[in-house]
Length: 281
Image (cartoon, rainbow, N blue to C red; front, side):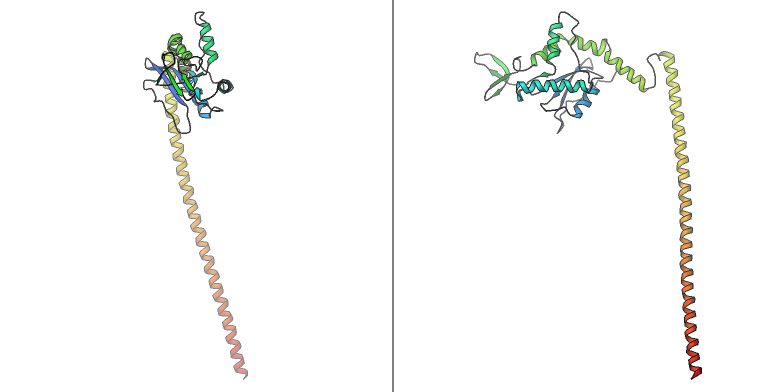
């Protein structure tokens, strides 16, 4: 019942939704998902829904992309805004463990840096001292990718690749926090409990299948009865419509005959009056 994660999804970027999702894959299963936010005043509903679903299955680490497009004060406010909205919507993000004294201080600093504000670049720039660094060049200067004064890329790299790679893997696979959550959810969807294992689980699954089959047969019978009653009612209505039409035509015919009789009576009266006048002359 382990989730099927053998075919990782491609990173995507839809028009109107600049959020980009990157997943780190290890041993044919997701170890970590870094959720990238663009610099905006608020989080979209799509971001919140996606994060809530991801947090059930992988370790979610929020990252602010293109952090060099804003000033430091605005970046701090945006970080606070992201954390506040995630907490208000009860979305759980990964917290780097601080129970190990050897990494407690470093992980505490990394937790305080979340969401990580990063800058990416594929270009190398030679500084005045002759050192080549990966950076983005602007008219006013450069933004170094691996300079902690410029962005949090180094902290993110240290947190994921060097300091906490085992903790991330352990939480996903060995400690089974995420897997057990997924397992309970799957059992609940199958109307089973955690203790329903072995023959008991098979028996309950068999009974559930029999119930579903019986329910499906009842549903088919109800649909057939409904269709049959509907057709009978439609036939009755058509018959009534035909009867009403016949009565209407009969009534029109009676009115026409009555009118003809009146006309004939008037004509007879007129002819008698004319004959009487001639006899008097």
